[in-house]
Length: 165
Image (cartoon, rainbow, N blue to C red):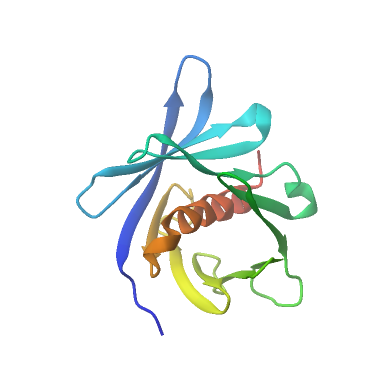
């Protein structure tokens, strides 16, 4: 059993850029240091996850096929993890299998807490702190090598649960 090594908060605000308006998330650590910005690119049907440490996009969450219950996390430069909803359980569960990588995202019965497993090892957990509005999340990281991926999973969950894009 693994334990949390890092706790992050992901909060929504409104993107007030000149060229884009819409959903915008900020991810901060326990000291309130801004680590990631997540920008909704509505035209491309994706969310861009930008690391403020390296000042570049590290992943994106593509929701082009959300109506078919399929989403993708694209890790730079070329790693794509495609997720589908597993209908064999009452709880919401996303599954993905790729080359050497089996990912499972499982919700509790309230759809407010999710465990993220990579090859059957929990690498993180995501808690929705405001289930009515879905604008505030706590992200616990168990494997520090997978921070970008777990942050992207939080965006994927938020996107799927809202499903009004």
